[in-house]
Image (tube, rainbow, N blue to C red; front, side, top):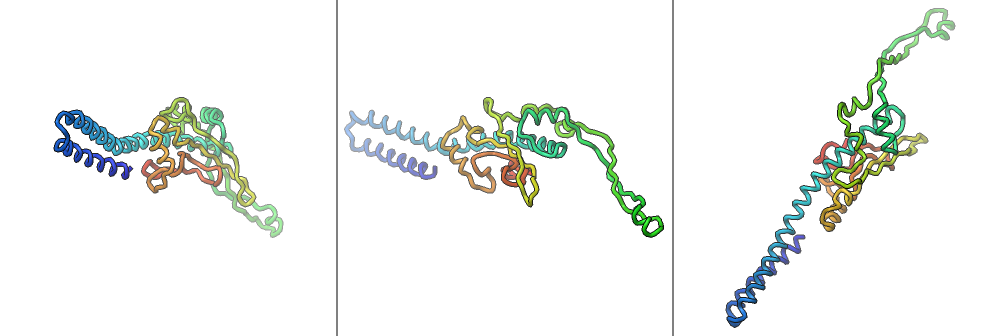
Length: 244
């Protein structure tokens, strides 16, 4: 883009020079037409130079605004998935199932307390009462998952929809990976930048897909979680909010 700007500025300066040369050396009868043509060229190049600066600025503003709304939805998906794992023991790979879970599931409220009981084996061995420590977990009650995560909001019912798009949905995956012979549940929710920015300048979107920066979203998608490692964080920087 900088190269284009420099070229455009150089062409404008050359064109202005040509206008002066025309005014000085070209016969009077040709001057009006040539001057109009050259000034039109100057205006066109000036407009192109302005847009080469203005359009990326507007693109970044819109991109940041859309990313924030998409990230808010990804956070809702992650919170719902973490609740599903806590209650069910695994993540869900289906939005309909996940929404039904939020509507119906409940957290179990428990209380952990230490106690002791007679160790019958040692008591019999030594002939005196011998105690051993135990942990007792009492169930205190149940709390709906929906109330804990979303209170009175029903936004979770549309969290599968990518904001600012026409009917596009997040890609949701879930499964297990094996570490030290233990199967660990994992999930990933994602959407391509091309989908979020489908109505924007294709060249600018292509540049955005190639971003490698500490304050940008690296790669060609926004996502939370991973199917390749135990990870429930998002791939966006802190400038968009916490990825944890």
